[in-house]
Image 1 (cartoon, rainbow, N blue to C red):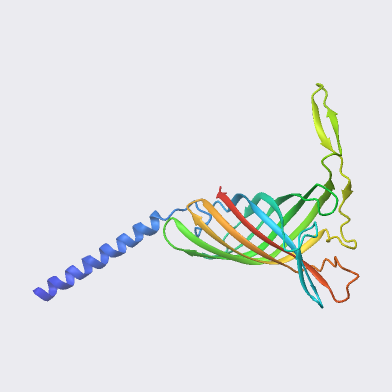
Image 2: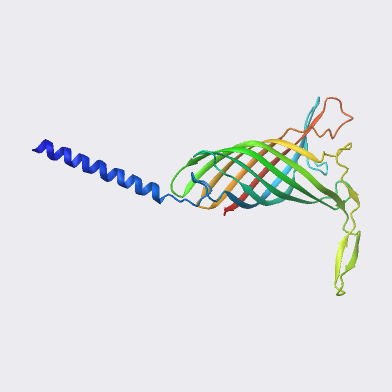
Length: 242
């Protein structure tokens, strides 16, 4: 009788455990970008980006920004929307389109200000590791492509008044020098990179850190034999899944 009672109690315990596990699975959030069904795979994000040009020569490695300042980086903002669908429970792909705006001030080249706008397209695969009901980690890696739309230098004293139809005046600056993409001393317009990134999702809020290693040889120092120049980039963004 005692053995029969023990068996009944064990079966009841197993049944309760299975029911609790099923209830936990059903309670898992189904609207997050990190779920298996992934019904809302879009993430709008805003973040910080910085890039640096690294040139390898016989004498060593030179790291600089577009002003030619050694050891410094060009800083900017990035915003856009990504598409991150799952093709399997923990595996999927990551792409999207972002606008990057870089603004810098320095007198290193005889100008005061620099600005540049470029488009960024990531092509990654990702793996998701759930930590809890509300927190997940995602690692993704692949190719990143940047296309510089326009860049140029200005001086603070090179300005004029622009009037609209209502007579309101706006202070506008002349652009004194355009970037001659692809020419001696300047980077190429197109840049391809090998990228790795790590994201943390807390419900629908996503924080992502990205590192890009340049694959394109920009040949900024064509007068130096056997020199290669690549563009490396760092990024940190905050996004919201919708």
